[in-house]
Length: 501
Image (cartoon, rainbow, N blue to C red; front, side, top):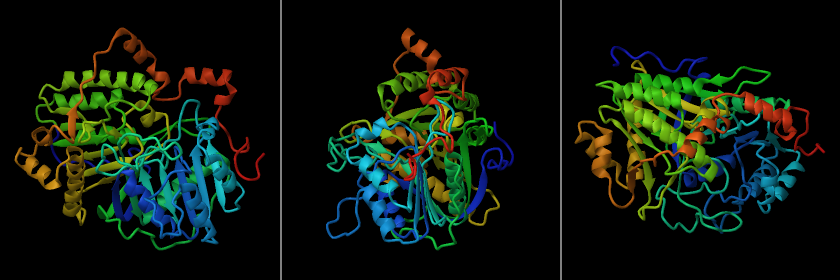
């Protein structure tokens, strides 16, 4: 039971890295809008464009084709065009080293990368500086340290979709084969002010750790904030929270996990979460403890129906079934719901977003999922805003956070935000009751019920720590000793810049 004044949850060194000011923060829902605003903002870059990601695919279209525009639309050609039209611009692209073989199936991508490597102002590196089995999962774009994007959207194939998530959108196609892929839901953010410069610092540190090379911060510039991007919040303190695995150079960082646990512990009425996975036992135990309380919060989780890929589904699907079993044992007051979104034709919408809204005082958006890797093994970056009672614009910020949550719920239900608000008000403030009242046979949220685990899946769970580890493990270290290709790359050990062999 929560009573008394809530302590500050965002604490540098514990639940976050830094707390910095943003003049504007916008939450960008789905990649159609995200790709468009990144393209618009990048055209205004003058000195520095930093791109850090899990993946970049040079073939993707950033916007619907415009025959009257002279600006290239494919990511690779667009970045080359921007550099040619900005004589002082330096572009640094840092992508997780997920394997050279993957590039061979990407048509023109290797040729575009070779073109980048021959350009003296485009610097492209693959980052394998992490423990064996880990991944670089942060998704950050920083323009002149004046505007930054951070969230869950990768600039790669199979991500583009609109908020309508139509069953047969003709633009939802793979870049080379033109084969259609399914509906995809995702979220990112844009920030300016001190928050943008801090994300620039983080990206430059990632580059230094991967390459051994330092990047000088750019001179102060005005924000290239896109004209059509409406801020969700104004004049707010933004916390940057991270996950990073420990290695020979530094201790592990677990700020995001600490923030999740603190937020769950201090929630009063409602926790709303969107996540690609739901497999963290620590998070599940924290939720179950709150659900056991007579006056604890409601918890609503929006997940995909299944993981993306058979192996991920074997591990993450089985782990999700186990944590749901734990949560439901604690949910004695029936306040927990987990849903999967579907289209008007009842096609599953893949949820890749990573969002948390607690009551009306906490918003968190980033790259981290509710699985062990995201909370202790991979590199992740989330942005969070906590409304303190003494904040000058506390009332406006609280209202905006709740409005964002209701807007996301409305998207999933295929309803207007006004109808969602009316349903919540008519349900004495209960989000669970409102969703149940608004669910329909078309575009909607569908309750998720995992199939029972069999003996084989129970054994898979016993081995799942290898694929969804909380920390670097002895089994991964043993693999590294026997498989040199798995060893993390270190600065000076080879690279992909123009001067490397």
